[in-house]
Image 1 (cartoon, rainbow, N blue to C red):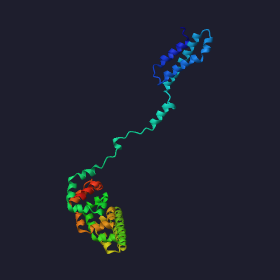
Image 2: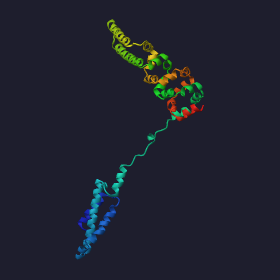
Image 3: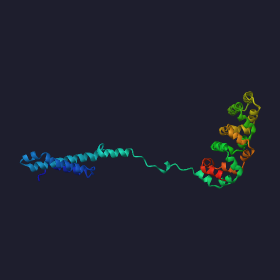
Image 4: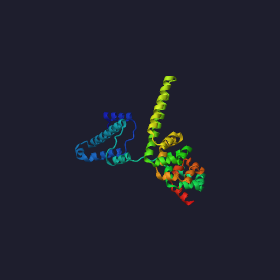
Length: 300
């Protein structure tokens, strides 16, 4: 076989490029093209006297073209398939949903279950006074508010809920509105006093200004209060502090809750030891919404 200068150049190019893995189906494609070439040009090849040499040139030409294409792919990277079944698989991979991790799984309320299985709950259910309080629908509704339950842990709040003067104020729309206005004035007065305290320096003139400012606020508050009952409540720091909690005012705004607190045995149960231990448990509010809680109350 006669080697030509192009043969040496092709060999040198292949050695310089080194080994590389072609993409899937590349070899089959090249061989298919090689197989198709003789059939397409068979008549022309046979017409030449040196047909064997021409066939060799065709094969070497195809091989050289394949080697050059392979070299380009190796340097620049193989092209991404954008059509056919491969493209369909690629599209499916783009929209494949990510696997859920343990953080995505919403866990159950174990605090409620822990409370229902605790000795605290057992004592609560076995205590007739506490069970009577919790069996009241209005009381249960109020206690499902975590802010209210947290507030009831305070003795002053419990005393406020039992206070008949407070109940009477919330039974009257005008008196309640007056109380609300007075509570807001108290909060504004406290904020103003804090500002004055922060800005006053230790000298007689500025001290006099502070006294005048506070006196003016108190005079305005007194002028706005028409009801003796409201004035009495606002004048009691424990009552006004308890009623400054929105959840407490919301509970007292419900007639059924006020009616429950008007019954001496239910009002007294607010200080029941079993009840107080229960509402201090982190799982109490969540457990109150469980059917097991209601079943236990009804079953005893």
